[in-house]
Image (cartoon, rainbow, N blue to C red; front, side):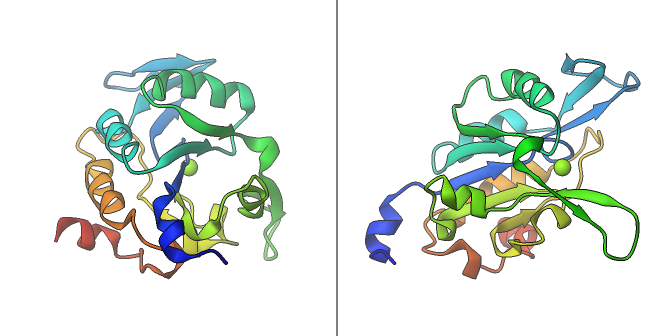
Length: 187
Ligand SMILES: [Mg+2]
């Protein structure tokens, strides 16, 4: 356990999910515009993605972690993070496959023990993800967003940037009540 004053001087780490959090991908051409292509996928950036990244990069170190393939992750990152640098870009091989105990379904979780092993203090790590299940082992580190599926009027990232900047100085993000973050952001 470090001195909390010392802890606070270190920049926190913000780990960003990709699909349905910062972008939306479809195999069919979307009815509106798309921003870029990755393999067979038409990718749309979530509204405010660029200004969100620029704003949060002032207060956080940024990383990305997706349960998609590494090639897809690299392609998306090349277009999406062209103006910010990432501490790491992790993909499916870093995720853990879980089986739903009540059914045949399998799904990926992001086990933050791997982030801790990479040298980060989990008190100062936040994950932005649309999936609660992906963070089922570390809900205290999660800021959950509504899934983005292409709505051009979506304002989630605009509000989220304000919220994340406001709490960036917390000694322990896991003790911050984050489920009502939208109301706190708009206050
Ligand atoms: Mg997602």
